[in-house]
Length: 347
Image 1 (spheres, rainbow, N blue to C red):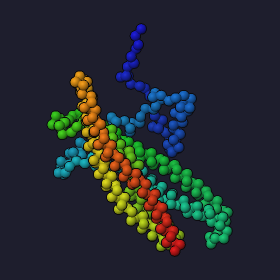
Image 2: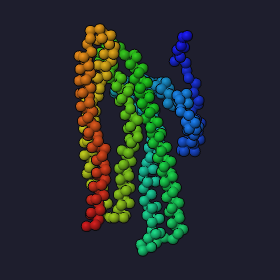
Image 3: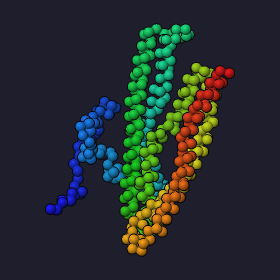
Image 4: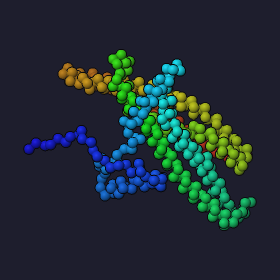
């Protein structure tokens, strides 16, 4: 007659993650997920079907490692009379893999992607009978085969490098969340007076997610200029001085995008305190909800929450509008650069 309440403190035994012992072919093709796909084809997936996380992804191990390195950084900072830097700790933990996958992305963008137009041009020359560069069928097959290999290598290496960079960003996020949580448990009363619950919650739930986004594109900060030089060289071989004109238009807009990035950062700095204030207010309301219900203070506190959310939405709306213009300006710059170069080449 009594319903048994399931216990939640029992550890769920999960299957070992097949990614841990996958070979290089399974890693590149993601075939280590085939068993999970087969299970999902037969029935709906459940939480028990998920694999056990990799050791490199566990917060306990990542938190222990970053805490150990942070203590070493504090000792080194005291000996050299400087402030401890979290960036130094992250570089020591993930700098090697970060550099390796950056080199892979550089190879993709500056070698594989740049040779695709050359291979396509050589293949099209076979069909251009009246052109200056006439090639035979043997070379055409070589260009076609090289193009297929190039596209295959680009697809495989690009997805592999992007996924691994997302892994690095995720591991940094998990490690930072772990050390923030441990630090929050050991804060003194004096330190608690200098921060709020909303600020800590916002750090863990919102701010650390920027690691996942940033590490997807961070290598293009140095790959972009290198790729621009390579593209300019190949364009110079084809259209001459017009290539310099097109690249110049592109470079002129770089300061504009830098200024837009700075303004976007300022808006985010204004949005964060609003979010912290709203989260802090909601935590205090939830903690004292019994008193609020007893004195029927629902409406005044509702107005307080609405006002806090309104001010937060105002900052978010301004930031999103500028972010939309920032993200779509690259298409306008690309079209303008192509139009300017084409006009200069024709006239």
